[in-house]
Length: 107
Image (cartoon, rainbow, N blue to C red):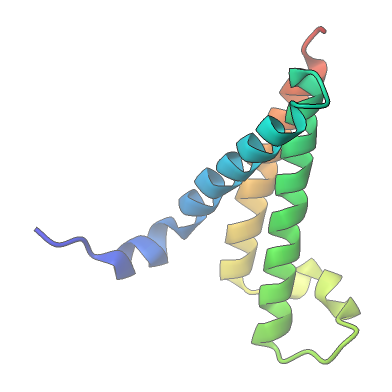
């Protein structure tokens, strides 16, 4: 049995980004746990992961359209491709929902 990686890339790329974002958030939270309580560490980790994915998809857009520096038009997310949108927004919504839950939780 062989795995069709092309099919997975075309149809489940967004899921891989979500798993990767959660892992990044967890690693950053573990690192920041040295200085902060768990709740604050989770906020730091989730915020870092959201920023990371926004920057990565923005850079992907800039490269795909051969945008010359200073890349300010890269912030126009409505110009991103469908692939870039579906990589970023589901991940952003997941991380934002988790961040909301962490912040709303009583200390």
